[in-house]
Image (cartoon, rainbow, N blue to C red; front, side, top):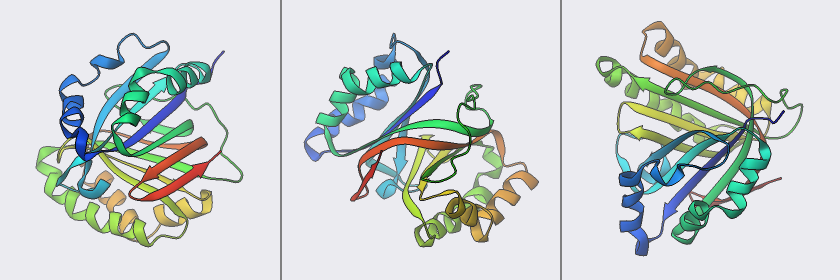
Length: 230
């Protein structure tokens, strides 16, 4: 039986390819139809400069895919025209292969399987996504901004990306950390802890998913930073 395998790609569209980049939002998931083993897919935008912001980026975007097996994920990564097209139109390109080891909640009704034990050593990835209740949006963003600022100062942070399906109300944050200790220290202190307590205590979200992953591999460039994990 295969293991669910997640593929996350982040792209900064090259200046010459801006029109092509905008077309990705128009086509949405249509180019991803009939991909073998694809269980779930989201086309994502990003905040200004790739961060978590109410102001959208005009060039930074990404996609999140879950496959039924590692083999189908590898075939997609190595030979899919979609991946090749994004790479050829990118000023920056980053791709990660991930196994979920802890996940609660859902994304458009889809829940990830836990397919890996918690890593003893090595990098940890985290995805936090939420559909924000419109009447709670202002309160949410007031809490979110200090939490994002704290990531930049946090020890052990390797990569951070602010992502979203729609501005303001359907948001996600993807991060990679050096180890379990570094992500726990950030998650259980300061602005992030305050934001999480408020989100649960005041019912900010109509749907949410909080997932941690073992990083199988990750390589590329995001926000000018080169990342290589294997």
